[in-house]
Image (cartoon, rainbow, N blue to C red; front, side, top):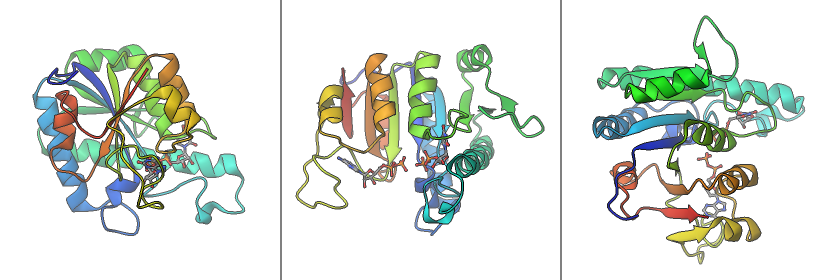
Length: 238
Ligand SMILES: Nc1ncnc2c1ncn2[C@@H]1O[C@H](COP(=O)(O)OP(=O)(O)O)[C@@H](O)[C@H]1O
Ligand SMILES: O=c1ccn([C@@H]2O[C@H](COP(=O)(O)OP(=O)(O)O)[C@@H](O)[C@H]2O)c(=O)[nH]1
């Protein structure tokens, strides 16, 4: 696919990556840099939808949630993604990019609800659509929300921007001898239990024949190269 610019993509942005070097929350320099890269891609005319995580504010399985009812903790996690979505929308506005937030949980005074045809219309109008509150269901992740919304929006590829620069033979943060794949099939990712995305997200994308690209959120220019179809990170194919 080298050199072919995508027309419509879904970008999964890690909430944790928004922390930058901070211990939690949204790091200002990080969100500005990310916004600049997203603005550059939006100006190429690529229809861009974004699912944003919430791990920088709250994670349902984190130590802070220990002892809590899991579903309650997960709803808190989903609310955290709404905060990140609003911060991203605001930052994009400052870079001249019009974005709309749609939430899988109804919080009418704050964000509009997820309505598929409306989201599709925004994309046709070249507005960036930010999907907040994950899938709206506890026990899921924003990676699964990325696969789900990506399939619903009919995107050509799901792009996961994360802390690692691709999928490795083992977790590179634990095994320094791990080697990076430039391409790998869904079946291989699933049978080898490579954990850069959760199995539900991989399975949904595999069934929908929706490729995934995993690349580093910290590498300048990586997003643009990825959406322009250049070699970047790891491509997971059918
Ligand atoms: N085989 C693997 N290849 C790459 N990363 C892996 C692998 N297995 C586990 N990981 C871990 O997955 C992490 C990314 O997943 P996650 O923390 O869920 O990201 P995000 O916050 O972007 O959703 C990496 O930081 C890495 O430590
Ligand atoms: O469909 C979803 C998406 C997210 N979450 C909750 O929201 C948290 C934040 O999302 P995630 O961990 O995927 O964010 P990221 O890893 O991208 O920072 C998760 O831990 C879950 O508690 C959820 O319950 N359902």
